[in-house]
Image (tube, rainbow, N blue to C red; front, side, top):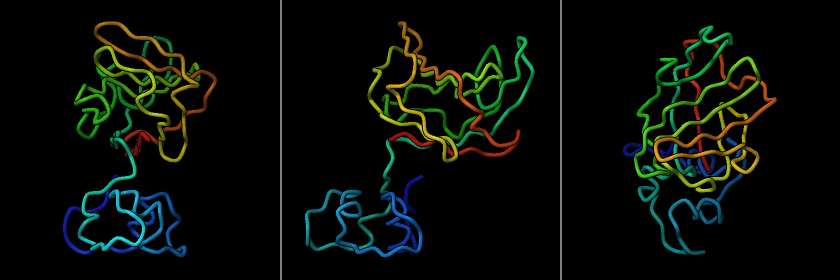
Length: 171
C-alpha cells in the first residue's frame, strides 16, 4: 500500500510497511526499515524520507465482482468478456504501466492473473491477495504478443464477499 505521502508518519507505520508486525519493537536503524529507502547502517535519517515508501513492487485494490459466467462462478476483477468487478488504477508498476486485465478466481479452483502484453515471468516473486500468497514460480505461465497469464490450480478463493475491496500486493 505504501506509506503516507504527507502529514504525520510513525515508526510503527514504517515498521509494518517493511514487513514487521504492528506494535512490535523496532528501531529506525533496523535493516528492513532502512531498506525501504536504501539507507546505510547508522546513516542520518529523517522520518520525512519515508513519505510514499513501499515494501511492495505494486499494490492494487480490487472491488470484488461475483457472477456465474460460462458455467462457473467467478470472483474478483476481469475485463471483457467477463466484465467483472473493478480495480484501483489497473496499471502495473512492475511492467511499465501495462494494463492489469484480470485477477480472478473461478469455481474450478483456478486463480488467474492477466497482464496486457508479452511480460516476463519472474519480474516479481509473490502476489498476495488479502493475506493469501501465490508465488510466480508455482504458476502455469503463458504469454503471447498481446497478453500474459499466470494460472494457479487447486486453490481456494482468496477474495472476500462481492462488493468488498481486496488488497493485492506484489513483491
